[in-house]
Length: 103
Figure 1 (cartoon, helix red, strand yellow):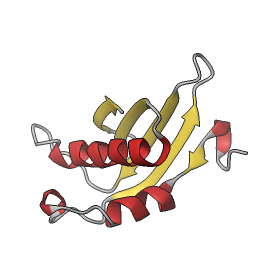
Figure 2 (cartoon, helix red, strand yellow):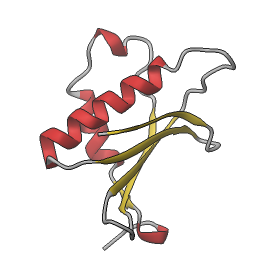
Figure 3 (cartoon, one colour):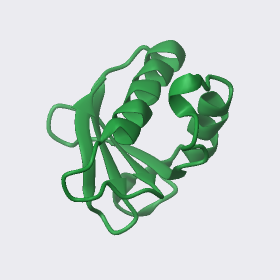
Figure 4 (cartoon, rainbow, N blue to C red):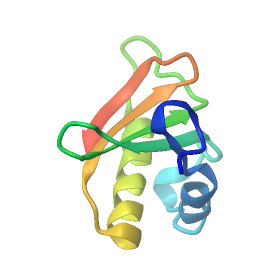
C-alpha cells in the first residue's frame, strides 16, 4: 500500500542508503543532498514515475551537474535493485526543476 497521498511510495531511506554506499569523487561537496524520494506507478501504461527532492538549487545560468549526478545514481540503483524503467524528476524543495530524465 502507498504510504503517501495519491499513490506515492516513500523510497528515501532505501535510495539514500544505496547512494551513501556508492559515493565517488563526483559527489565531493554535495553530500548529503537528498531530502526525499517518492515513486508511483502511472495509471496510464503502468510506467514508474519517480521524484527526487534535493536541498540544493541550481542558480540561474548555473550548472545542473549535481542534479544529473543524483539522476545517474538513481538510475543505477533502480537497475541494480529492481531492473525496471521509468521517468525521473529531480527537483528542489519548492518544486523547481533541476533535471528530468529516465532510467
